Image (tube, rainbow, N blue to C red; front, side, top):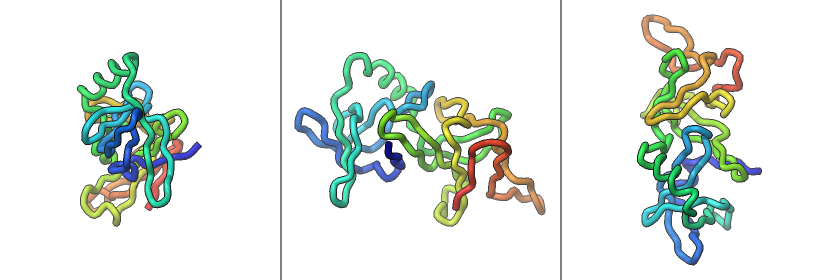
Length: 175
């Protein structure tokens, strides 16, 4: 099993059988399961079967969506369930930031963790919170709800800190 960061896959070549190529521009996510339903390319939509590294690039092997896959894919597509830049809040409504990236498992196509940052600009200089799939309660249109144990550190001098603390969860602060 390998984990892939979604942001690093955007722009990768997609080989769609039979014999067509595309570039991936986004992923469609099932909000109920957190599973990747498929991808959106510049020319078409597809079901991802395999991700493999070739020389200095990553190639995604895909196929056309089957009839049984089309309805959930189209519903998630209509609801714009893409995850990038979704707001992340705790179940009691505390804002934690926005989804900056996520990791997917290449066997189950499940989201394993999301990366949340409260800074859009200069994000390379700020900390981001890693939230594991076990702490994600729901994904809906434009919003991810996580366990209440994820809270921002207290305010000092009237200004909130941009760091997070995890309280009894699998979430970790990374730099």
